Image: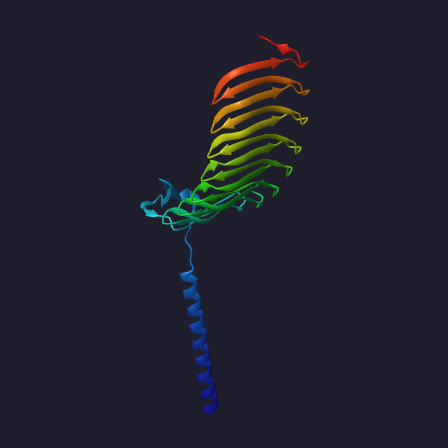
Length: 242
């Protein structure tokens, strides 16, 4: 009989210990709970997100949207009404479409965009809401389409574009958001089409254009944005006076 009582006491003690662990586990889960809001439950004002049912309440948690097939389409993190944390979008087939980090309502860090097949289409960097560093875009075949450098949201450096076949189509120099340096364009056959010099946003120096056969077509001379002289030729190299 004593043995049975001892066994019963052991059983009760084990059961109590088990309940303590369960209670601890449930408490931890509740502390890690994140509020989730369907996008149509949210209204936006002055870059901040509020509940439609209570416009005095800032959103704290995740705003999401789903495709008709149930696939997740959008998921954005908010703190005190501002986007803060990871922002993601998906194509209907489940392929990731867009990814960007936010900090207190401003883009901050690397962003990436993909097409429905998973091909990277664009990427760039932001610092406190401003473009900063290298930004690139690609054609659907994976060929680089454009490449530009930003400094505090202004173009600064070479801005280049390519055709779908990989042929360079243009390149333009920028400094502090203004054209500065040589600006060039090419024909699809690789022949130089246009070349001009810029200085702090104004044309300065020679400005020339070529026919597709390589023959010079125009030549202008500028000084501080003002035209000094102009000459024109036909495709055979004959000067045109009119």
